Image 1 (cartoon, rainbow, N blue to C red):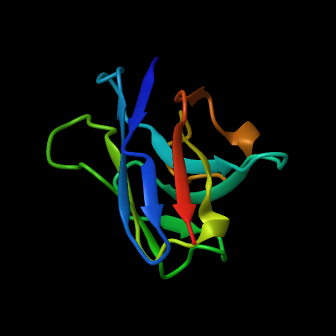
Image 2 (image 1 turned 90 degrees about the vertical axis):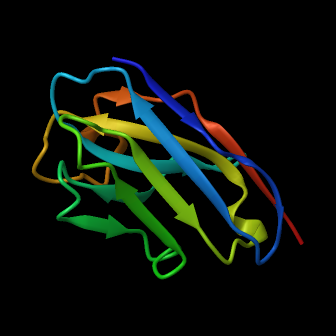
Length: 126
């Protein structure tokens, strides 16, 4: 299973970016999540959604600024998005999408996920 994330880039503080992640396996559903890893820091959970988008969760640091969503019209489709608004320099990191075979709940830990994308870099200038 391969995950392809894209949409990162350089943006000024207060700006917006939209990340997307496509999953090669179209034979089943996955719970999906976004993590990020800043230089010198551990990878941290940002946002997650269960298989149909009915349950989502966010880290406190991005709650109200970031929104995770996913395609649900065509089955199965695990394409997931992360809309990031009001970006701040502390949001600078490499962003990773992840997929879990546990479709009911999007876990908060790195170890909850089975497959990872290659990462897309987000840089927010002050």
